[in-house]
Image 1 (tube, rainbow, N blue to C red):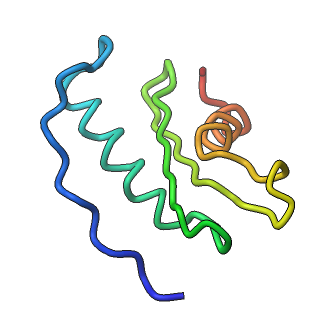
Image 2 (cartoon, one colour; image 1 turned 90 degrees about the vertical axis):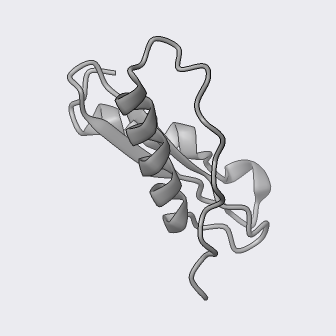
Length: 90
């Protein structure tokens, strides 16, 4: 599979929901990187997610598709599950 195209340039963050600007920027960057690992042979729609746990760790996830559409897993669920398994305080 060819590498994904470079990420688009994003507008400045305006709603950070209590995150610092540095945290929001780090989450965005890691989610963008995570989407390069998505497994999406059917839709070719890559999604990445990043979760900031209460102990300050960032955990990422990417969508994983299955030929049986409902069995696929979204990036957000993958990131949350990885945070829980990794011992992060979600």
